[in-house]
Image (cartoon, rainbow, N blue to C red; front, top):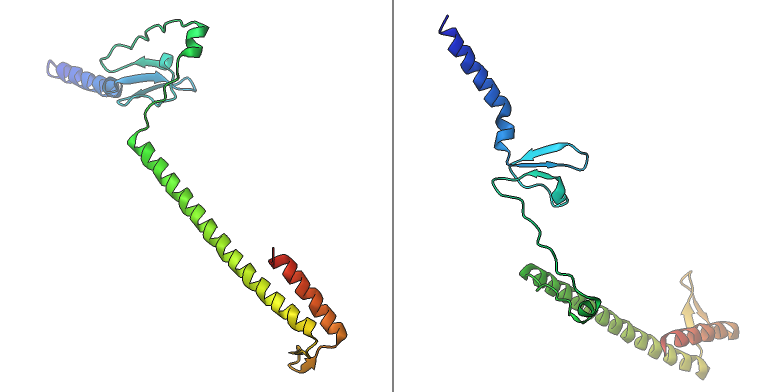
Length: 171
């Protein structure tokens, strides 16, 4: 019977240690937004307020130093210092600038291409208008594939279309 008491005692101690092991291993303890207590070997998420942290690993809680009270005149005259950008931030900013420059170059190339096309269309339309004004017979092929000569009504319609092309392309 003396052998069973230590075995029971050891079993009881082992079971107790097993039950308290997760809490003992966790070094951080905090209360989350829903009010539940969380245990972890890692610090709580960034959004957890300082007042919700209940336990830290072997470190005392930092005490915030009181801020000096500045007058309104001191606050207005003191320059606001911006923190220096990190390497990643400067690389990101450089990439943004490069992308913007590339986009501007594409826009400029597209505008130049459109301007050249408008100039070509303008030149063709003016040349066609000149041909229409000369009174030379103009023949064209209709939808059936037959050749037809422009009469006065057809010439007037062509003059109208040519004038619209000139007004839209020649600026």
